[in-house]
Image 1: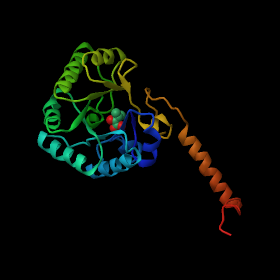
Image 2: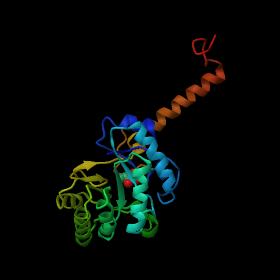
Image 3: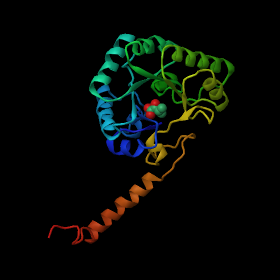
Length: 244
Ligand code: KIV
């Protein structure tokens, strides 16, 4: 699974990724915010429409933004909006057993749900930052109980973020649905990365778990500098690039 926020990158990602996630990480890696909490529902809808246009045959997952699933009632109303206004196939919800009722309300109303436990970025302000989870036995037991509750509520997959590798293995093995890891070691069923981490466009910081497959920002900066130099020297546009 790879995130996308626009049609151009969705089209690049779609042929290789089993799932395209319109993550609320777009607040940070696209919108320049310091956490994910400020993204609005309308902004998520706008970006999801673009992703669906770029990846029309993909399983696109809409990340429910902060505050949009605080009760089963508003979760259902908002998730119905996602299905009516976009072509996304599923929604993602952060939270463990305490969100089981919300997840069940959606799955029993024909909405496919992906769970998200471990490090949950929407809890960052409450918990004082982005902290690795599953550090002791009690925490791992809680995460296993969360994964089982999410599965029992009808979710089709779970994102497991920022969890020690051994703990992630136990959590993955405790449920039958796919567990997709990010910063959760190699023993999950799948892996997800944010596109701008994967392609090296996000430079504010590099999470330990991310691997850059391209130095995107460096390449883009060099190309932009070449364009600027060519304009200043008169080398761009050439006769071939002009209507004569
Ligand atoms: O918002 C996001 O991009 C996510 C992934 C990191 C799983 O939730």
